[in-house]
Image (cartoon, rainbow, N blue to C red; front, side, top):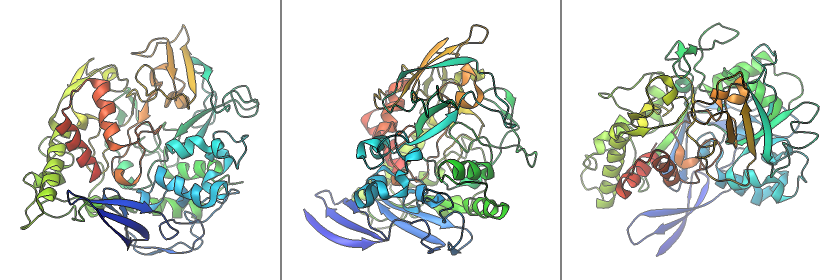
Length: 502
């Protein structure tokens, strides 16, 4: 096996020419790849970074942007972080587990991403101890502290329909007298992945005036009165980019006081102009070649909020690879890979299976079970989220379907006698993360999570809100087990290859 060290987009790459001819990348992270808060570099119109499945490209619609003094890139709080800390271009504007561990190897607990407020399993643990940051280092999870009981948009307490009992607390945070449910300010600590700050013009696009998953009216921006998409956060605890920026500055940046209106304007403007996606396949071929229209340019030029139909299906940009592409002289293995991607795109839309026991799907009036495909809930072409507002319980956090995770907390939620039970799990639900129910206090919302973006997946493992899928193959396996789809090995590989190029 031949091994050469090369340089590409700020990454040292050990390139292994395998017997099959496929290039395998052993990434060695360095300072050029990492965007440090306060670097004062120029955020360019286009930047491309290598990953194990090819290359990922991030586009800035505003062109070159000076970051000196820009609030997205400036540490405005007390812990040294800026927004860019957890939204790195090389990781599809999120933060991969590989990058997190590279930062620990370089600086340990001195790196601001390990700030104990949310970068440790609990703020009261020894900050310099690697074990204190195990959930971040092993699953890419930050602590999200939710005040309990919840408050509505006006700050009024919501009377919850259920009680919360801590069954398992490996981090010690939920039973802490300082940070837990019995503290002076009762708080529930859950652990989640950072969502990407990319392709937001599509994610924020509003396609409905009501939430079809609950039948309730869609929520409105409290400042403008306009409907919002409700797709921004995993638990919809904030509704707008402006509100999210304020929430993140107070919690993740530990900012004292409030950002200025100008700072908020700059952050929202910047976040709204970023497009990010995989741009090249493992052989270095462009995803916008050979009859395909992949890559972030396709996302940037698209209009937000367009619901796909069977005649205009999601991931249609790769259907042109059905026969391996149109260029002459392609490597046979590249043609095979491209044909696999095209099959994966077809499977995603056309392979139907029985979806059963999922609140937010089967509770919508479709029936239980309902027959549909992956594209039922991942139907927005440009991002892969669900254009229909609302959240879904796929079983990633609620027992009995959740991945056994003794490293995560486990809660027992008991619905009150005067309230309806969870539609499929009954009056008592065991969950690692109550999800949307921490925002609404409703039993029916236990475990519901907003659909995840599917772009730039190759740059930001692990997956799902709780990092329960370490690889793209695990995503497919989780769905296959959950809904007894019975994918063949070829089906699974085709779907994995599709996700590699998104």
